[in-house]
Length: 376
Image 1: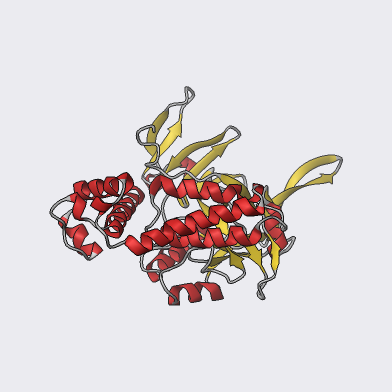
Image 2: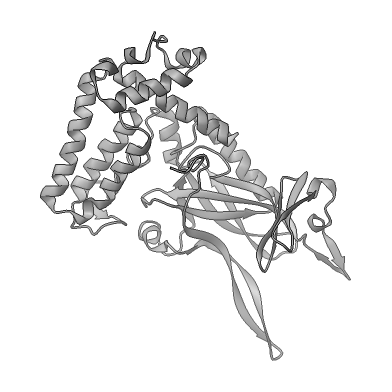
């Protein structure tokens, strides 16, 4: 594996939410494009499964972040674009501007008086700044399982500040872990100072937000957010299968749902870690192409693995295989005394004394610490 390959999370965008469009207007024999504010989300790519649940013109969608708050999920900077794309990005103090040869050059940003971030006048008309705050939110939609994320750009200082304040407060209410907590993404149209219609994006609590915050910490998005979302299968409130965006309704839905629920519980319990997570998710993705007997056999293998770990989780790793001992050696090497206090068990004299569960909990703790450092 390439060194550093997994040090930064990069989500694959599968769709984009927009709140405006441009329509062609003809006046005096001349045609030009006029921006139109929308009171619904216009979804570019990946629209079908969302519209199946939320309607053709959704004004409100229940969403969640795939991970905790970080630049991978909430990318808020001053940004300046040209026809070629993004040409400068800054934090308000220092900007990084693309040069003709493709290199980056540091320059003063908005809070240090960058002229591109200031309004200008052309006669009686006030021109908007070429550079402004833009926050890109990367999220998943409840009821639409996917490997990638949808994105929406929230533009303007007030909009970015409102979104950032909400996300930070929600993260605090969630005890510091925002991943998987559902909230509403809404769009409304109001009239601005110039009396022209303007679309406004808001993030706010929904009934499901309070349910999750008041409930347990077990918040896997495939089972805790909405009763109608079970694994990779969308069901009605009464349990009737509606659809799955990833496989046809008639193919192994119940087996797939059982596999997804068991897998996510095993990940939550730290029975499955690291590369093994992706291995099992790959199995999950291929269940739809298996026959019923083969799919059931895959589920039984996972179930047997989980049952074995449950039964032997308190046994020392020395009695088990290479994977257990590798986890123990890794944990023993990198854990600090304060980590043992957080984990709630004593530091062993040697790696082989770790129990199977302790070794896995320790490795999961180290993974989480690394993610927090990268986010910071």
